Length: 203
Image 1 (cartoon, rainbow, N blue to C red):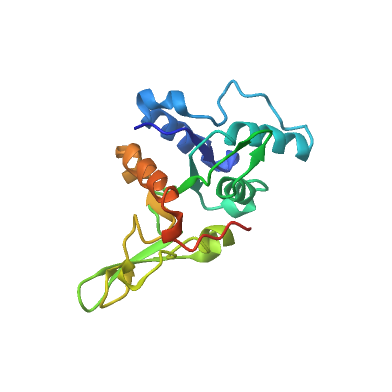
Image 2: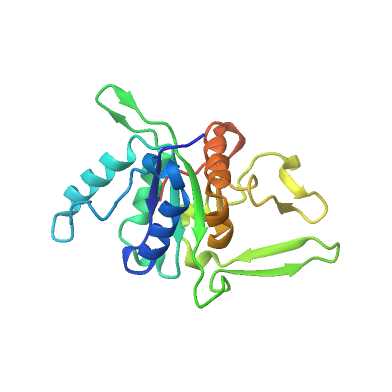
């Protein structure tokens, strides 16, 4: 089932990937609520006006897609957009639910090694190590946060399932673009099971 989505991204380096994500949605792109080429230019407006426009776009969405790019943390808005997505916001007589959030890791110079490295444990389990310095605290704090000892994909080496082990999963762009509905639906399902995660809603 299609979900109303918002894409959070650093315009100067991730606009191309944003466009690919919208294109990959196919017919479901009609449910996209973020910026388009027809959106008003807010470059020279006030911070409060930008926030108001972002709030208007995000309020009615259920899944936020965050483009994780090399210079993302230099953005003034992405961590605020994630925080807004995770909070329950009341406007007039309506209250929004916590969004599902999925991170799409941008390929840079042909690889993802600017953010992640892979290795194998002695027992054969594949382990991905993420450079948390390249991420906002609000993303790091919502990683590996599923509750319970049975949350591990492998109880022996304490590794987490990439889709269910973290409230904010990080998916390489190649995988996401092949089947965006899979990852959007996974994020949405987690938003309906918030009690299974230790959610951090503050930047």
